Image 1 (cartoon, rainbow, N blue to C red):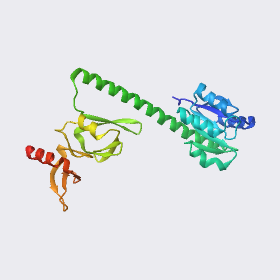
Image 2 (cartoon, rainbow, N blue to C red):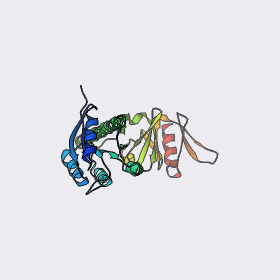
Image 3 (spheres, helix red, strand yellow):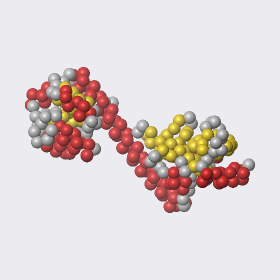
Image 4 (cartoon, rainbow, N blue to C red):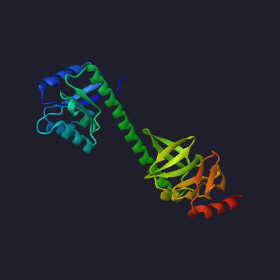
Length: 264
C-alpha cells in the first residue's frame, strides 16, 4: 500500500524556477503539487485554502517575502516550510523559523528528495501528536463519566505522553514522584517520565495509603520505602528499595514518622 502523497505548494515569483522544481518532483514518488503561487500574499492565501503538507518557499518575492509567509505558517500551525533560495546568506535566519530545510538554487535532486523525506517525518509526528491528543480527550471523558457515576476515586494509573504515544503507568509501580517546574517526574521501571501535573493536584488524586508525600516536591511509594534515617547533617531521609534516598522536609517529618510507626 503506497504512502499518502505529500501535498506540496510551490511559491516562487520566477516561472523558470517553478518549472525546474516541478520537473525534479516528477521523479520523486508520493508527492502531489496542489498549487503554485507567484507572490507571498498568494502563497498565504493558497496555504489557507489548499491546506498543503509542505510549502517550497522562495525568499525574495513581491507583496510578502518568504519570511513573512513562514511567520504566517507558524501562527496558523500550517504546513512545513522548505526554503528554496539563490542566496546562502539567509540560511541561519531561515532555520530560526523552524524550517525543515534550506535549499540553494539551482536545487540538487538529492537535496530536494532528502528535504521532502524530512517533511514526511514531520507530518507523521504531527499526525501522531494529534491522535495522542484525541486519545487523551477520550480518556478524560471516560474518567469524568466514571466519577459522576461512582464518585471520585484515587488514580490507579497515569497515561504519559511519550514520543507521540501514550504509556500506561500503574501508580503502584511508580517508585517516587518529584516536582520539576511545571511538570512532575515519575521514576518507573528504571526510567523517568515527565508528566504535566502539579504536586497539589497529585496529592488530591493519589491514595495516601499508596503514595506518601515526604516533601513539597516529592512523593514516595509506600511499598518501595525501605526505611527512614538521619544523615550526617541530621536531615531525615527516606531510603527506597532501589537505594535512592529522598529528603523528608521538616513540614512532613512528623507525619512520616507517625505513619512509619503505625505501619511497623
